[in-house]
Length: 635
Image 1 (tube, rainbow, N blue to C red):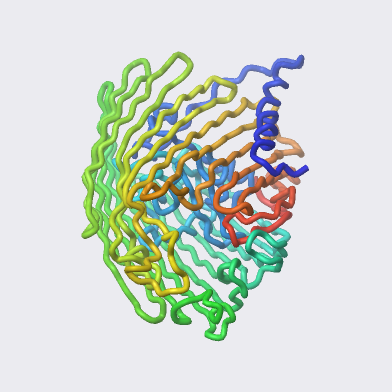
Image 2: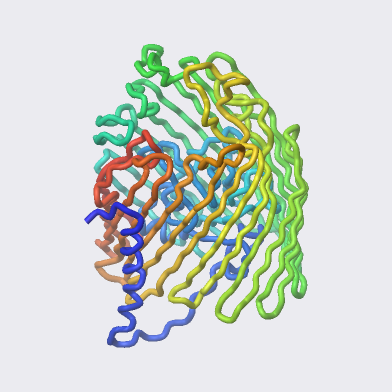
């Protein structure tokens, strides 16, 4: 049965979440007592290693084991079930994925690789996480709420840290090889051992779709995708210094069919993108302090080509010359000191970055440099009963675009078996290169975004397997957004800009989550996000685009802790309520079964979109229907 409404989904989710609890109350042999699991540790919330339970900011972790078990091919797949996070895809694997946290979209969310800004931030390549493979990724940490004090520009909505260094407790400890295939014509091979990873993937992305919203029924055209990716990470010691090095290179080749809402689709457009990053980290550990120096760099080159007789070109679906180029290079330096004393921890440092971006639509090439200079400090005062107070301040200058003093305050208050957390902060985002100089798209008169807001959370770690309720509210000025009154029939000009500053906006909502303890290997979870306010308040209040009001996730999973033929199974449901258009409301259910074919060999069967829901995550871009996949892997 296909659940089509969020209300029906919530009923189903409630049952799934309480099912293991009911099972625990029924007469059955009592399971033997097991020690409490070690408290997980995170490194993103406060730019230092600390227990997850001590973090004042709302922080979620996606482990390597979860990514492998659920068959997450990309970082976007892994983020899709994090409470408070919504991932919107413009189609199958290889197409753009946009992330929303606390009502903020990808441009207002800082994406890090091992703690430093990822490449393509200035060019606004939001498909970075949509195509970055999970091979080589050891864990993902998501910090929700403004992180401007510690991380600076672009962290208004939160921080996503993709960790690849393999030094954490959740890292892959044994080599893993996998071969997979799916019914869309996809084929993939990957190898990873915690130090080196390699992936080669090809997806034909062939499927039919019915009439959805403004899109007539049809079949995908020129929508194939291929990827080659490699990462290397190592760490050790050089005398008293800890040394870590990591580097990655990714090359993608895909067809670009254009906006499906305006057929005919492009039949010749191709996009080839290469991204690279590298980092060296030196650390000096002393009895009460740790000093870290990081040097890193990122590069991106994307070439977009099409034939001048492409039917989509005649239909104004493609613009500019037949060869278009975007490049970005960035060098970064970070010096950080963590000083610990009885009852307090001080994190202080400087961040420096410099680079340039170039965009060339084949007619009028443009380039623009960017720079960041920042100093920050955050003092954490902790009491013996677990109470904590954080006070922070960041001073940042982003070249000619402006700067900010960003203060923040956070508290954690134990309340018996509960914990209350509250944060207040300001945020800042400078316009990026694409915002300012991309032909026919940009607006050189854009002003920097400025925000202020906070959140309040109540945690109940002892309720079943843990529960949390969090409320967030943000207000700001000059949000950079597409112009709702843009005239597509007229050229872009100062009187008809595609991008504008929204003078005044307001966002608010809440995130609720609960999970059960594992009972005989069975566990479940439920998360609900309600962004009840996301308004442009410049004139008459209007809903900001692509901010779903309701999003819900449920998981029901089984994992066999003992070696045996049946390894694990799960059902994963994701529902999105109404927002821009009716065709973007849907409920999707995925499932998996994993069997042990040999001691160190697993066979995984996966079904994506079990109910064959025909929907468009983004209006005009129909998603695949029911898809089958199989994977053969070690461990």
